[in-house]
Length: 56
Image 1 (spheres, one colour):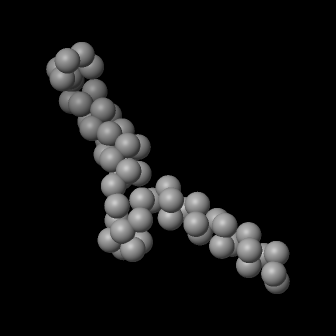
Image 2 (cartoon, helix red, strand yellow):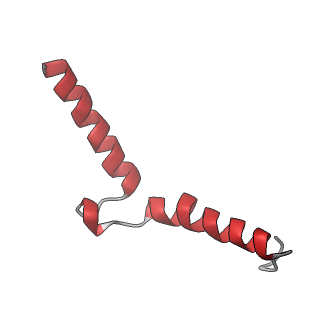
């Protein structure tokens, strides 16, 4: 892709999918996870799992 012009439908689909799934959804806050950013939520979850495993 160059300057917002897509070569074909597949090129447009791929670029848009990557933007939404790889960039946008990982950066925006989600109400379903208490308005956290998904990467931060995952990090907190993993830390919690490690604490629970070490205590158990």
